[in-house]
Image (cartoon, rainbow, N blue to C red):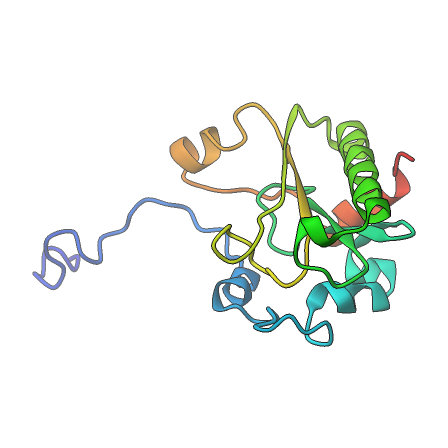
Length: 182
C-alpha cells in the first residue's frame, strides 16, 4: 500500500514530482553565502584568494596582466567563465582604463575559446553590479561569459525535468586552458 492509499499523504503533499535529481551539494554553499565576503575586504574575498592558488586548483583558465579568467564554481552552463580583475574593486566605473580594456579583451578571448572548444552558439555576457543588481559577490567586480546552445535551457529542464552539466569543472578548465585563444 502507498502513502497516498494509507491516507498519510494528502492533497499532493509528499507526492513525487517526477523530477530527476542530479545532486549538486556544492550549490548549497552558494545558496548559504559561504565564502562570500560581507564587507568589501580583500582579505576575505574569494576573487582575491583565487590567484594565489595554482591555475588547476583555482580553476583559472588564463592569467592576464591586470585580470584573469576563471571557471564559475556554480555554473549556469558548462564552460561558464568569469573575467575578474586582480585588483579588489567593486564598481566597473572605478576600474582604470587599462583594467577595463583588459577585461574587454579577455572577454573576447573567452568567447573565441569557448566557440572553439564547445561550439557555443551564443553567449550571455554581463556584470551584476551591487547586491541589488544581483551580484553574488558584490565586493569584487567580475564579468560573466556564459556559453549557450539552442535548446540548452528548454529541453532538459522542461521536458526531461533535469539540468545537466556534462563535464567536471577540472576537465572543462583543462580543455579551455589548453585551447586558449590570444
